[in-house]
Length: 353
Image (cartoon, rainbow, N blue to C red; front, side, top):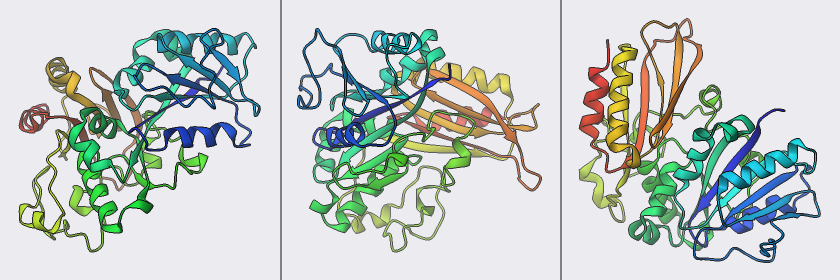
């Protein structure tokens, strides 16, 4: 049986997760989707699409989708669904896990890597984060879980942009880019997103990531082509350095604890040194390391090494060979909470051949 793709849907309260989910569940897209409501928060999920009677955990929808509310362990729910699918008791093509607005998606993502039984049945496709444009700045300022959700995202959908000005939306998008430069952002109207933008994004699929994401790690935030962006100051910066003299051009400068920085080098890594270094930093900073991902030039292989991690868990895969006219080089982005950038960049530098 091929692996069942899983999508984690996260986002701020009121950002339109339920609207998006309803659309996914009610649309006649011919896909059979199992939805897991990860109900471990204080707020109750929208009852009109979900039967919350705890006796009946799995509800079959009219268009063939399945709903499953869980109050206990996500692992158990995933195992139960996979077992029922294997036995032919349930038919579904993919799973969507909706976390509550206050949840940290990290442990949910880790479930797919840590548990062998889950890893044999499921493939984690991506983490989608919905952001409410009207209340985003306030939520990002006051709630760390909102900032973590942005840091974890493979794709960010911004809802309610019709309620704010174009400048405010641009300002928000810049802020989100500083926090997570590797997640594409898209303004959506009340969760009305084409399903092709929700599924099969392969944010966690190491080999294909670079083929489908041409903007993966554009040169620093400043090279994002913003046109008349006041941030775009026309000169280069050290990795992670921002243009202080332009802060007055923004409405306000946010110093979020979730930040990203990039390591680059044209020299190859010594695999043993790199493994030692990453092992050491993950031991110390793992809980604060949200996502880290890169394409690495390693000594001893003609192929790209594609690497990524979530918290303490990391893995690498051999990617395609370096192209004939391609200069081998490494790029790695780290997204985390108050990570000591100098320690990371220095350690990576010292792991080179």
